[in-house]
Figure 1 (cartoon, one colour):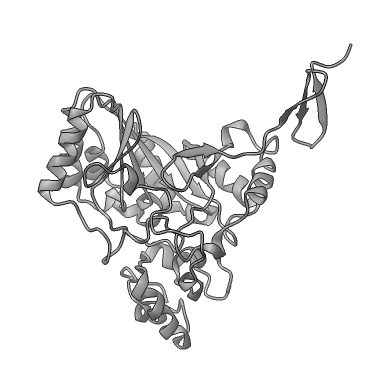
Figure 2 (cartoon, helix red, strand yellow; figure 1 turned 120 degrees about the horizontal axis):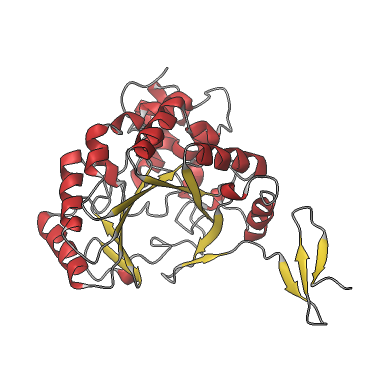
Length: 350
């Protein structure tokens, strides 16, 4: 039942044994609204006998996606609010997003840009729009970092990716290029010498943020792809979304974060799920998230601790939302909670 090509339609899902024939119409209804895409690598990971399989939950369409709550919005983190030029999002002073493409090798069911990506989305920047985006970056000397996102920029050919990196290499004030991608995990065979070479630009430091949400995603092939990147000098970061029924458990997150560190991937952001349309069944409460993250502290190495963050709706940026371990006492001292939950006054008496 393993797929030998990407699965892009409800019929593909039935043929691969990922949904029964009686769910074909349901999947078609979801597919009319949101893109479907599963690589052979991810399809092979799915346990067809587990109705709650965490890999299937990320990629196989669910009728719950057609339920939109009152607080959900098409642009949940306010990209368009800060997009002065097509393809550019300039939310923070020293960095911009460059969204050259709005397709991905897989389409996550919880995607916060699900209204913008896929065949029905915003598409790929035209040459004219790309020129304007690079002109914007060149004209704004405060831009120190350019973040390639989308969509997934690693769906581009090494030639096109290399051309983009070369253009960024010619802009003196840009010092760091960060690439956000699922490709090393969901399509690891793409991470070859040609693509790795395309990720480098003269005088720039390249960071690559690897998106994975469950330790099972880090297959031997994915691990080898990450090792190729690290061995080539590409600095690696992690991105994970906290998702109900997938990784809302401290033990699962601990296993994932430890695996990242073993692969020379620095745990970076643990995202609270955004208010994207049709994703309420994935969301945990902030209190639940704080408790899960607190369960990591002291249990696993400090190297393995991600920052739990929320992208404030409306385009107001990210904020760390982990529970504080410190409170102020009436006598001016502070109460500090250790990883076991015990509270200590600081400075201690006597």
